Structures are given as C-alpha cells and as structure tokens.
Length: 157
Image 1 (tube, one colour):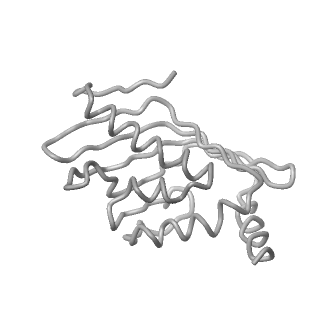
Image 2 (image 1 turned 30 degrees about the horizontal axis):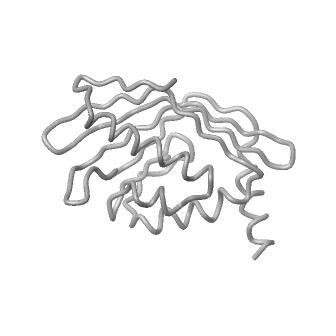
C-alpha cells in the first residue's frame, strides 16, 4: 500500500502524489499522453547522476519523444515508487519518492534504484510537474540495454 508523507497531508498532497505516480505508470504502460498531461509545457530534466552531463530544459513534447524513442524498445519496464513525500509552499510543491526501475530486454534485466524529485507549480490547469531529477543510488545489470532497445525500435521503423 502506498503512503503519502507530508507536512501538509490532505487532499492537495494526495492529488500531487497521484499526479507524480501517474508518470512512471503511464510510461510503463505506453500511455505517453497521460504522462504528458502531468507536466508543465517546459520541464527541467536531470538524469546526470545516471548519464553524466547537465540538467536539460525541454519542451514537454521533446521529453516524451525521447521516452518514446527508448522505452518501447524494451520487452517491459516497471518503475515502482515508494511512499511519495510532498512539501507544499504557496502554489509550489516538491514531491519525492524512492524508485526501483526495471528494464527487461531479451531475457536480461537492468535495474536502477534511487529517488525522484519533482518540483510542481499550481496554475490555471491545476498542479503540473515543472522538473524531474533522478538520483541514482544503485545499478545492476547492463546499461547497454538502452542502446539495444533503441536499435530494436529503429529496426522496426
């Protein structure tokens, strides 16, 4: 059972927790339009703890295009979140959760453990995620599966 841990527990924290939980679930299911609906028009994405480099400011459709160019190449993915913690502050929020992300391809498994941080802003359309940071704590398996998943997608095209 999932929990919401918040210094401001209540319906707002629940809505925010549901929103950030929808992102990895939508991606695992290939429902990118649902993931896109959770984001503001532009987002700051930071996977530097996994891939190096710097955080990137992207238009949300560009982020989703990148995910569409990778995730469907795996046989399956599963991103399991731990309890979502929500901190609220006058129209802004920060949600965070531990994550274990599994990626299967041709009988091999690549697993990442770490945490996500999602800053959010309240706007005319409700709460929207304005950024996403993944902080890697553990990796098992071959990250080369990503290149193989992308190659598999390219071969299908």
